[in-house]
Length: 145
Image (cartoon, rainbow, N blue to C red; front, side, top):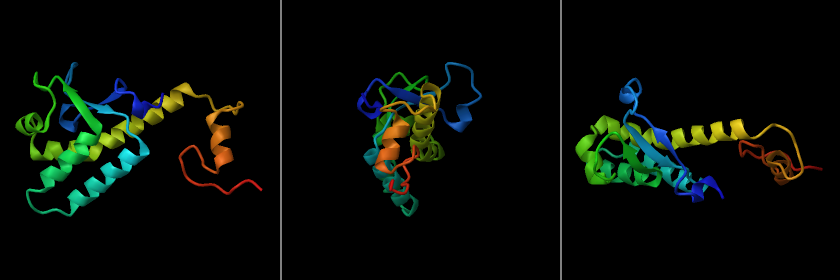
């Protein structure tokens, strides 16, 4: 099952101010996201960068809600916009919105590097991607002649 389809597959995101705290450190549970969700998240973050009024928080929340599904060691309340705004500073909300999707991408890359050897066996990702004209990073390559 693709990671983005499994609601039980999450990875933690820790704010910079919490990274040196002892376990259990405050963290946000981020789901793995599809390419479509990554694109929506990126568009919202880009849109927020140009907003100079209070509507920025609506846009940032929409970006966060694509990725973040919960939290640990922050509050006994379920994760929600209201609870988040009651617990986090504006700077922390911005950091969460900007960093959560990148943390998911790094965790996905780490899993891929740990679990897949670089051999080209029949049906391997390298073979399938090569046949489709894509590299493992998703960039286009020249079509085989």
